[in-house]
Length: 258
Image (cartoon, rainbow, N blue to C red; front, side, top):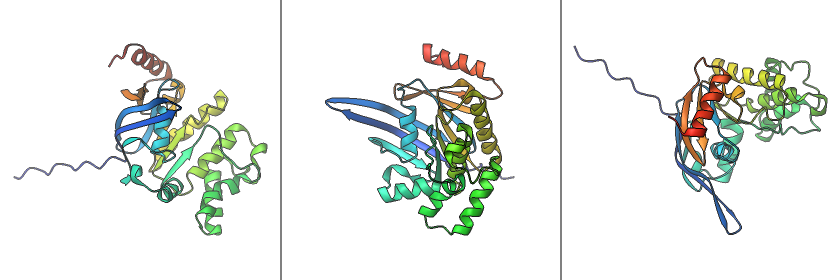
């Protein structure tokens, strides 16, 4: 009998190779990322943890096409983000990925429904489709009764759920979240983390979240640790709780223990 053919491994959904980012501050050069390489096959909730100034938000901004690397390569779902023109990056951010920020970035003069529809309006999508799609997303996130409210009439947690709905408008395969609960209380934060974890399990979606909070990262299945502009370790969270993760993270930060 002939041996069964070896399974062909799917290409990485997120593939980062030798990424560097240097900022010029007057006469000083600040190396925010030194040499970052990582690979995420796809599916699930993945975290990036590190202390303030470690480069984690810089990394996320490069992956999301919000900034350009000094050197290195970024491939997202087969797209060479590092080589895109400004016009291509705009299309990539609007159509291929979703981005959630710590600041909700909602327009105060627009309703929740209109805020979710806005990327589609800018992209020239049919209004009827946009209205239905945005309404379904808000309904699925528990905001069916808040669609016509403006941001100042919504709680912080509700505003972030509107921002999540907006990020999902075009059904992206990758969702980037930069400290998404940094402006929320503990109850609202926990609800957002649980919601993101559920979305990663039930949708064809990979979520990459930057956080410094073990309570947030404990909802992820895998966490990359970054320090001084380098990925220094990786934690398989599994069924462990936030206390275990906090202790393991501190061990890595303090001792570089692998």
